[in-house]
Amino acid sequence: MESWGSRVREDPTSLVGEPASSLHELLDEVDEAFARSGSPLFVEIPSDRPVTLIGDSHGDWPAVSAALRHARHGPVPGRFVGLGDYVDRATWSEPDPAALPNGSIWNAAYLLAWNAAAPGEVVLLRGNHEATRQIPVPNPTLLRELGRAYPPEEASVLWERLTRALERLPLAARTANGVFLAHGGIPPADRRDPRQWRADDRELLEALLWSDPEFEHPPSRVVGPPYGASELEEFLQEFGCGFMIKGHAPWHSGRAIYGGRLLTLHTSDLFSRFGEGGVYLAELPALPRISSLGEVTLRAWEHGAWKPRAMAMSTMPPAFPTSAEASGGTSSGPVRTIQ
Ligand SMILES: [Mn+2]
Image (cartoon, rainbow, N blue to C red; front, top):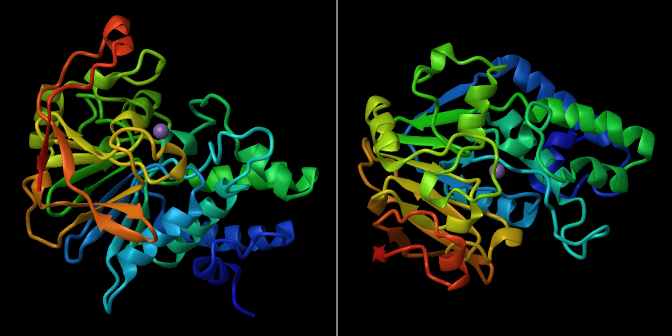
């Protein structure tokens, strides 16, 4: 019989209604793949093929599987990178969602199955929702979703296994053509050499998985140091990169900030009304060097297709709006469009 890994890679909903043993079998394959790869904290991604990137998906397996199919169409499959936050927040509805029930489980299983089968082609970075045991997130839903899909005594065992797998994902990546990739921010100034990174370094986890650019730092976020334009610029130069692509902050999804050095993506119906509005992916061309975001194709999921979308580019980083400005409905600063 076909393995659960290959069935799930074919159809993310294969596990729906199946016993817990099916997910356990899939997680066996995932664990074997992690044992082979050694779970590095940092990944260098070749630029011999185009790279498709997705941002926070939070259980939206229809968008994720459509993005992965887009990345891998054609005779030579392109590479695919997830920027973290695959689980939790599957819906705003409580307690039983109207859409995407248990989406976190099927999304995580789908992505982990692909990563296990094609580790060099499907790369998954860790988001803050994949590190909830080190740094808790408010109102995680994965355990509740497992409790809805499986008997209670199975749900906690599966949560432990799934969480352990997600905790083995790398913290950041760099493409050979000079793009830095992480879920939230950049490493602290004294941790710029990934060979020195440690899995239990909480300050490093906060900076990479939780931090936001300072001018859009929301007052509610309490973890991770905000970073400024010059700090990012200095880091990118030191790191041999032209710009950074990340997820994490839905309020500027689809928008480039800091003079075109930082693009944020969200790939989830749940957050599609935030930022520039849309379910996004970005494509890096297979060039020896990408020096600007102008060479990156941004696409939004519209009527069953990934349509090219002009990238909004905020040129002047404004101060985070005061409550008076925010209530006056001022926008986040001058925006221009690059083609
Ligand atoms: Mn996040």
